[in-house]
Amino acid sequence: MRRTARVPTLPLVLGFTDGLLNALTLAAGAIVGSGAPIGYGLALRVGVAALVTAAFTMAVADYADRRAELVRASHELNLTVRGRLVATRLGRRAVAESVRSMTIAALASFLGALLPLLAGALLPRLSWLVIVFTIGALAALGTMIAGLTAGSRARWGILMALGGGAVTLIGIQLHIT
Image (tube, rainbow, N blue to C red; front, side, top):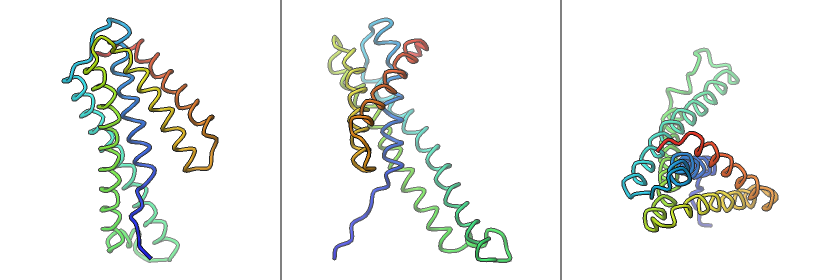
């Protein structure tokens, strides 16, 4: 039997969602407010910002969760030194798995932010399509999540699209770019 590597769902979902929402928040004000086209530089800067924030957030959260599990396991095993398992091979594996999750989330966030904004840079006269494309990507992500979690594809898709719409309205009000 062939063993395949399982890609963690949390970093992928967190990364893509974070990137898409970053694109909406930062671009909505420029697109709707001033009608300014999205440039390649802006697309890349937003993508890098999404990558960095997702990497930091995922690394801290994932490692804290894994380390807390090892501390709880030490306690349940009645080990006399608190957190003893953290200093073992299990602790090193927790670091490696956290780095893996961080990398997946960071790359997914980068692509989630970059791709819709690149579409806007490629089609500067139709920059409003960035919003349509990004909300559509959130809806598609929602249907994929529903498939993985045995949820309602329609409900997940609609809720993710509504969330994207809400973030777009917030981005318009904030008018960051």
